[in-house]
Length: 100
Image (cartoon, rainbow, N blue to C red):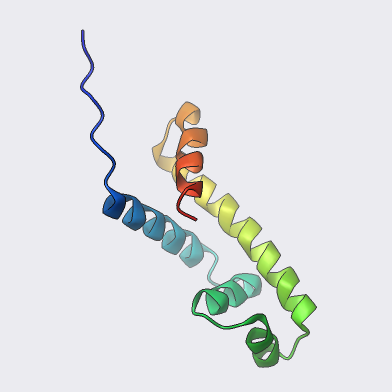
């Protein structure tokens, strides 16, 4: 039995897929102060602007953002695992990394 050929990649679908995953993960981590700093960075604020707003040092903001990215990555992996088989999770994450 022949399997159907895979549909060609759709860049717009992929962009929306990544955006949706990131938004879902950020929503689950909304109350995390580190993630709030990441949201500020995603809105275009510099490390210095975030530090000034929070009354912290830039090195603190660097640490906040590092931890937030780690948490965000773990949350995205959990979301992917909800709809993918265990065997496909690694492939989905690899595909996701092409867009981040």
